[in-house]
Length: 341
Image (cartoon, rainbow, N blue to C red):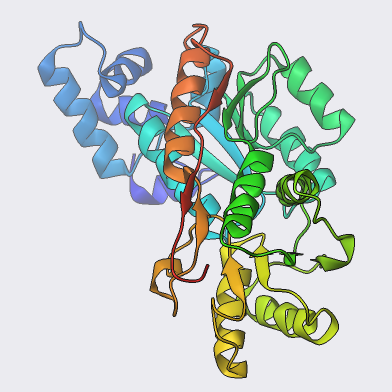
């Protein structure tokens, strides 16, 4: 087939039949050769691959899935791509799945359950091999879609003891408790909690903060500053200034995310607030640059890459029809005590 003939095709797409015709073999032989199946003569394999390269042939994953009843696509739904937390998870998932022949499809939900439901409807229509989803905050319709699809699914970032639900993560509440306990151990009594975005995991950290302070008899709800705005360094600085203006008695701040805490540290430097002598600060997630702040930021290091790898491995087992050793894998967290506390 000439280039001009190919241009006259309605879709403009080179097909497997075009490759087979050019290589002078049957479409079945061409398909088997491109898949690397045994039993196809080396000379035929070389001829088919050469024809495919010359024609610029790209296999159609939808057609392949329809023919084999097996997809190679794995949608991964995350809230944001602007947060390094999720980028690290995605890179680990991709690196784990790719050697096994699976391609990751990235869907961004923007913390909106309705948007996630729409993405799920779109992805499930193409019969993916598996699903990787962030957390458990979704609509009832989305839950029904997942359950009715029969597609293997693993949840990231959060844990549940619910039977039949596969998940990899750590206790957000325990982590919030641990960083608050650290500040108490450093002699702080008026510990504020500053949060943005207010997604379920943020609020679980808040509950850990509350539980710890209640256990020590020093919880004061007036020291919580919760903003629905997206988390950012700029917002962190603004919220710290608001705290110091309206709650000047505070002696420590637990920021729900490191970008807020980094902004808080920069604002303290600008305002000549001594950290940690006058005001201790702590963040969450140990994002890039936190150890380079002045002073270095105390935070919770979360197992982002380990979560990506372990969740992908769990999903691989499910896609092979195997039962993972555990359905809820707790990877824990690490308290990084640095100069800011």
